[in-house]
Each structure stands twice: as structure tokens, then as C-alpha cells.
Length: 399
Image 1 (tube, helix red, strand yellow):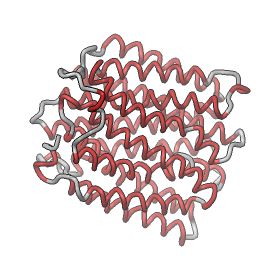
Image 2 (image 1 turned 180 degrees about the horizontal axis):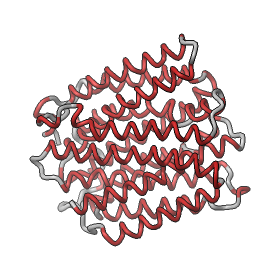
Image 3 (image 1 turned 45 degrees about the vertical axis):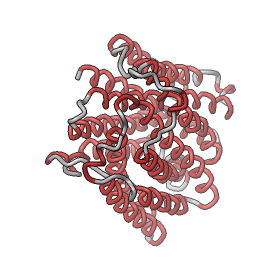
Image 4 (image 1 turned 60 degrees about the vertical axis):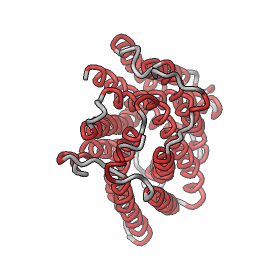
């Protein structure tokens, strides 16, 4: 329990700065006159290097331990923040892209390490407890990322870009020091050192879930990463603080729903999700997204349609994401948990990369309605893939 608390606190501190950094970067470079596509390009290495990091980070964690990969992620985030303290004339697109590449590596090392560790802390026969702990870790992380969005908007408005970055750097330095002092250094080292050729998953359940995850997160980020903040500022005239506040509410609500997903899906009476659960909630999300698209196209008040619709989308998406997060930990083999979880989050990062790039391009060329329509198509792909996931007792014995 102590190690779960240490890992969770470290994950929280990292996530708060990561959310704030994302909002600071989007809004600051939009104010400098960058186009939506150029802003999207700032994050392409963040997502691209996340793909590589999850694949090779899982292998490194299995050989060297989860503590080392988690601590390395914190140090790289500190370096990424320090780079942005450079003179504003140095903040070219290529320079910021490199900084974001380090941040992407850091984030995925941190997430892979935290999620994998929960599998090792919870006993094999306690699937309901595992579900609750994964949901709590994931939900609280997302709530804090939302708080980070709000923090980023407020810091930019009242402190300016450089002082805001300095404040984030100082806070994360404290978290890094405490993590180094308290974490178990041997956690997650595999008894049988995996060969490099074992880096890819051979589990059909893990592979199918990873493909569904790729499409699911592409569906979210195709409107969320670039299109939505720019739309709210450019089309609706919202201030930086207003944009940050709305996105914070979205992410915090998203995280809160994830924390309570075990109750929503029946964990309190001993039920844990399976492939049928993933398919059912995917269909609910598709219907919700379709309703958002139709209301945005046909209603006379697009601002209200978008704000209310995407808040509902966030709640349903949170249930889907939480179910996926439990299933990958349940499917993963204990002695190669970091490899399976790393492979899964590699697909997650690929989905975010796809969504990020499409968000800038589609919004710039066709507008917000097209972003929502593409989101609906990707949700349909994710749900279709989920039909083949294991059901019943086999869902938690597929690793």
C-alpha cells in the first residue's frame, strides 16, 4: 500500500505539470500567430516518441525495474521544462518540437511504470480490487491533468510564459526528489530477463485491445488537442483562462467518472469488465458522438451544443477508457507486465499521434464539424474491434 501511494503521488505531480505545459504551449503559440496545423506539429514528436518509448520502455522496465523508468521520466520532464526557459527568440518550431519529444518520452515512461506497478502490488486472485485500484489511479491522474489545463491557462494569463514554466519546473523538482527517496528500487524487475525479440506482444487479447485503444484515442484527440482550444478562442472569443477552465472541467469530470467506473459497471457486486462491456460502452459513445455532430450541424447555438455535448462525451469516454485500462492489466502476464502494458500504450500513443495530426489538418481545412465526424468514424472502428475481445471469466485469464 505504501508503494501504491508513492507511485500515485509521483504520477499525480508529473501529470499536473504535463497538463499545464500542454495548455501553456497551445495557447501561447496560438497568441504568437501560429496556425492550428503548426501548433499540431509542435506535438508530433511528443506523440511519436511516446510510441517508441512505450515499446522499448516496457522492455527496459522488465530488465532494470519500474523504479528506474519512472524516475527517468521525471528527470526528462524537468529537462523539457528547462529548455522552454530559453530566450523567446530561441523558441522556434523545431526547438519546441524537440522539447516536446523529451516530454513525450517522459510522460509515457511515467505512465507505463505507474500502470504496470499496480499489477505487481495486487494479488493475482483479486480482480475486483485490481479494477478499483487501476480506475482510481487512472481517474485521479486525469482529474489532475484537467487541473493542469486550468493551471496552465491561469499561469499564462497572470505570470506570462517564462515565469509559468519556472513555477512548474520548481514544483516537479520537489516531486522528483521525494520519489527518488521513497520508491522501492527493485520493483518490476523480471525474474526471467526477457529477450529483445519478446518485445512485441504474442497475446491475441492484448493485440486486439491495443488496436481498439488506438482508434479510441484517435477519436478523442482529433477534436480535443488542437481543434477545440483554437475553436473556443478564435470562433467563440474565449480568453485563455476561460479555455483552460473549460478543458480543466472536462478532464476533471472525465477523471472523476473513471474513479467511479467500477460502481457504474457493477464492481461493487463482484463484476469486472470483459469484451462485451467494452463493446457495449463503445456503442454508447458512438451514439453520443453522433448526437453531438447532429446538434452542432443543425442547432442555432453551436457554442452550447459543443460545450454540453462534449461534456457528455467526456463522461461516456471515461467509462470506455477505464474499462480498457483494467483489461490490459488483467490480460498482461505478471512476469512480462511492463512489456504487455508498454505495447498497449504504444498503440495508445499512436492513436494520440494520429488524432493530433488530424486535429490540426481537419480543423484548418474543414472545421470543427468535420473533426467530430471523424471522431465518430474512429469510435465505430474501435467498437467493431472490441467485439472480438474475450468475454466472461476468460477476460481476466487471457494473459
